[in-house]
Image 1: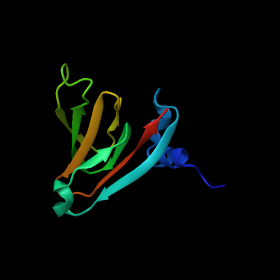
Image 2: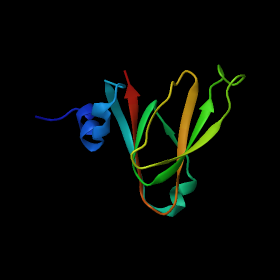
Image 3: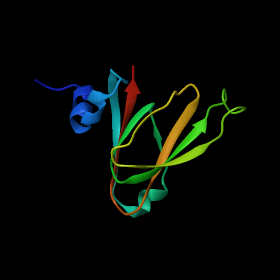
Image 4: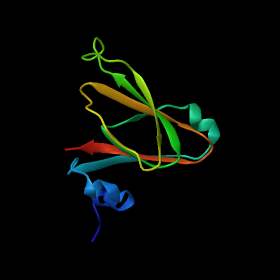
Length: 110
């Protein structure tokens, strides 16, 4: 039986099965950054993401709808961290930090 992308994501990151949200996850892509020269590149994320390994800086940028009341922020994340953002109000991107390889998977939640 071939597995769907949600089942694969839950196998790789079992913490998703114990969360109250999101119940329906659609895996879009995974990023593997294994070379320090690629640390300066910025990668955009969907609304749901999980850090599989390494450390990264996550940038949360307000959309046009929220700019008047919201500020851009940067959060340091590491393996095991999970995030969810409302794409109507926020855009997220990241770059890696440190010398360890970084794996980040993202997708959308229903």
